[in-house]
Length: 344
Image (cartoon, rainbow, N blue to C red):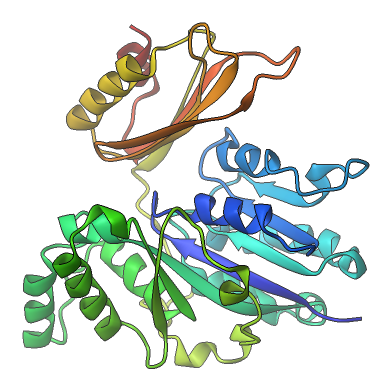
């Protein structure tokens, strides 16, 4: 039987991975695609978004094609969760054309790819390619790294620099493992800034890795699938900050907090509250569903920093609980404080 080609989609929080996955599923061109989502937080926001794409036949259960791992960062739980999940999917590989794995914003790509060297997985699947999604506007604003020119000058002056923050190391590891980089939100910067970002990124990437600007995840699937890279076989050419370590640790102070309420919110009022909360606490990412008064449709809300996007994705189902459900990811977030700030 053929090996399932697996495309790993990695990138920082809010870079646009889920939007890209949604576009791929909605434009699957007849491919039977299995999806594995690594959600950070117990409320499966991204999994529900993907299920709404309705890629399965009417008689199929979408849950059979979309698997959601909620027990922490995928690269830290490859043995506990990823291995048995892959075993289940490989039993159905005669009905799967390809697989998409969306890592969490905190996951290192290389440990995940290394799991494909395990014999039971290696015999049934191969990593076709690693796609790294990069937020152009965030880079331009210095959100993920410091000033690009200053950072580059500092690194050139001191090749032994060991003062990178964990976010910087993660970003570099994502670039080093990439077969292709998608640069998102390019419409939010001017042409000069876009050229500067692309030039800086190209200098950080392995030789031959291309950068493609991408608007709202809309890109031809043929550009993302079919690399035939067998990434698991050439990991030595994809260096990582953690290559000499037996394991890696994330910042234990990073956590996720859920806000679940029967309360309905006017979008502008809710976003104003969340923006104020972002100013008061170190919050990296907010995403979820909102019940809007007198609206029959569910509002999807996603935020990074002070930047918030929203859209209505579908009607509320009959019998479905019209709850507002948000997941906030940040540092040392307190459940009671979050609930008080949003619900008051």
